[in-house]
Image (cartoon, rainbow, N blue to C red; front, side, top):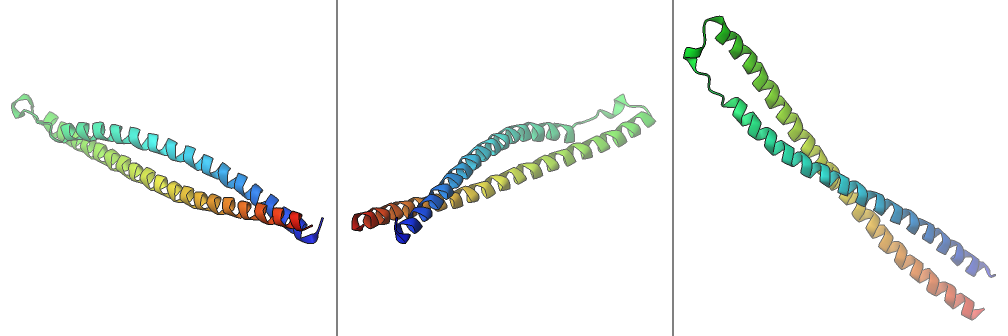
Length: 139
């Protein structure tokens, strides 16, 4: 085997190996994106329920004549803490939803990069195949 043919064959083997790695990365990223999208959709649904519940908690009306003395003050204090806790939970959940969205976008960018790499490798493999055929014909 000539040095040129040997070099082309090595380049071809390396490109095939890189292609397999790129395909594995693409598959893993597609699965990751799918899982993240399902999680994002579920969280969105739950967040809508949570916001509705939070709104009901914020707008609770207490009838004044049903309370006596310190019970009202104690209730107001505890209920205020409860409303604040629920509001913070809603904000943390919204933050997590945004993080999921960012993770999806990042994974999609990586996926596009690997897809471009795969297309380039396919082109390179095709070119190397043509070059190998040409060298073999000339030998």
